[in-house]
Image (cartoon, rainbow, N blue to C red):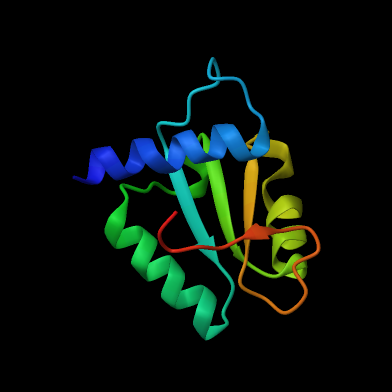
Length: 102
């Protein structure tokens, strides 16, 4: 079941951020801000999907607000890893909409 869900989120990442299917996301990392909503979402996603440490990831999913997204981009810029932001902050101008199911 975890592998099936993993493939679903990977397919969603391809579609939403327009990345070619030739770029494979087998190793997904979930990172979250300290806000309760972001932490809860990270716990849910980590239980639902197989995840890895950000340094071992093919893609990083950042849960939080714009400031958190920018800090994650700054932290991992040298790793050349795509970062997919999901809004669980207040503004979310840079982020994609977070939905637990879908």
